[in-house]
Image 1: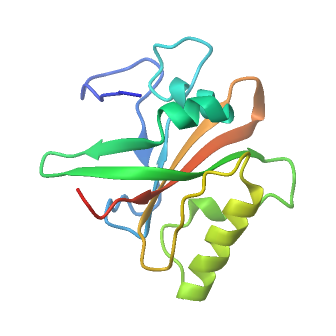
Image 2: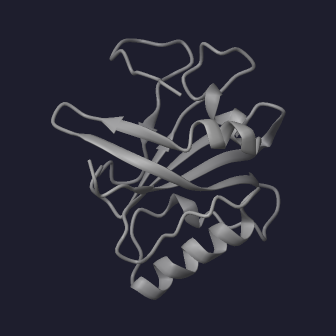
Length: 151
């Protein structure tokens, strides 16, 4: 999946980093719109509900003006915002302790749509991509990925 930001106006908006806007956070959360049409930048994220798409595109790159980071997706979730049991903890950029972070990782893996087999530990930094499920506006498709240390 190759998606580039052109740094110009887009009718449907462009992805944005949440919370503190710090791309060096423990968890960089990026929100973006998706659509039934492929010309919206986060629309390909909808395809990750199918494991076959994940197998074809298990990684993505985050490219800035100074570096290129590669991320390995370890969990794909379909979160229902109407369900109070569905935590919005994926929006956190940092945790108070390694135990809290590990609990988040464990919860994410337990709720993933399918097994990826990717291991994550408390030393990892992660990136979370969030988009709306165009089939149900109250749901979010979420991909959580660990930063590959070989970048």
